[in-house]
Image (cartoon, rainbow, N blue to C red):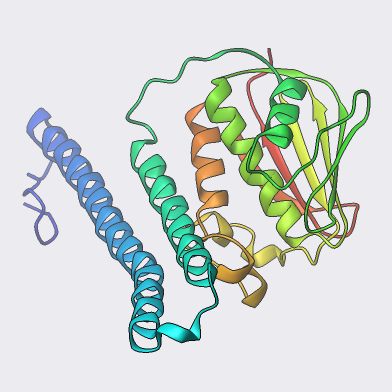
Amino acid sequence: VTGGPGALPVPRGDDELAALARTLNRMLDRLEEASARQRSFVADAAHELRSPIAALRATLDVARTHPDSYAPGELVEELAGEVARMQVLVDDLLLLARVGSRPLRATRVDLREVVEQVLAAPGEPWTTVAAGVSSASGSSGVTVQVIGDGAATADAGALARVVRNLVENAARHATSAVQVTLAEGRVTVDDDGPGIPEPDRERVFERFVRLDDSRQRGAGGAGLGLAIARELAREQDGDVRLTNSPAGGLRALLTLPPN
């Protein structure tokens, strides 16, 4: 009889009982891996939530101890910023928790329509896009240009979230320009920023990973955007991969089943 610690004993031989034991052990291994991922995710989430909560508490303590240290409206603005950051984090955590547990409705989706809706959405740092070759300038001065057309088979809502995360990530690190190129079943997002070294390109798809100071909280989110993008893409039989961009920065390639 063989078997590791915590595993079911596997009788020697190749009979049905041994095959059943091996199958059950593989299932137990997968359950243990899922449980470990969940424990790690909860610990990481608690750590990430601790920071904005601590910032809120510190701000309130200062306001309570030194009520004249804030100009009118300054305290509200500072607290609102921390609450908004915490709300984004909680929303992202809930979205990740639901990936794979809710049905998606795959239909023919016009990729250009989705991209332009993302760029024009309220609350996003983009202005109105023009017809033809579309471009939008964000508050940071980064220009987003949309070229081409295409369609894919996808859930429109999930696809919009993937596109938004990829464009926001590119714009956050771009020097001046982001280009979104569309084709059948493909969305390519190029930026002219510093890029990501090849050994780190898979790491950034892990939850809560930030590579350097430019990707810390002040420069963006909690390190969940690319993780969400890839998981939502794979849930639709697609994927997101990172390579060098001809623009000098990073290229994010979203592939989906063609229309």
